[in-house]
Image (cartoon, rainbow, N blue to C red; front, top):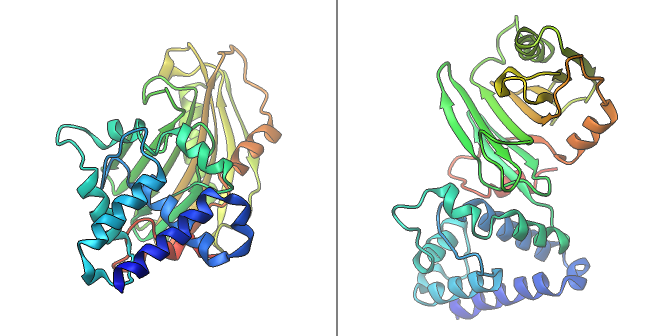
Length: 309
């Protein structure tokens, strides 16, 4: 029976999820669990809106009930079907924004850390123009962006901050950006790209500016360049804080991308000595960082990128 097949598949998956000592037995089962965890964390508050007390087992049961009403699914279980079933049980209020819904649900830092404790890595995969940008989400950071926009000049930006912080008031921020169709620009290199950003910092705080280049190597066989920049007194906070960041530019197949980790701390009237080891350790928390091709028709959680080496 088709329903029995789907039911067995979920029972198998979530038995492994809750009995973590069995994880070493089945690589395929682990991939299915990782796929489901990525699906719910990336779509909570967007495709469906579960309550903070909702567990993964609750979501599985909701999908089972939905599948039993739709025998046409047979033994398939793709992203759209799962999200459609979850949306029926956990619809999003029409007046709730995705960010408000996600902050209180399965995508909160507390619940994501629970997944980490079970041995899972938590990743974000973002489609930006011609490629997918994947990276790990460090502990403590919100799963939902506090700012995301397509900007003039064919630019994209997404920002996330620590749990409890906001777009305006933050101490740690991770930013990813994209600039469309610049990889073919012969006058632009990853180093030049980072130097342009660093130039903006220097112009903003000429008396307290400092910079150090950091070799990172290629990302998914694409050229990169990285540097750590710092303003002892940030004009964005009217000198109330310093602002430092490690910035990595990646020359993609068609577009340029950046991954940035910024920090605001105590202001200084002098240039701040840069602790290279600290910033490299921070950036390692984002690994793996990789670019993947966009597969036509594929939706979140983008299994082709999750499974890619």
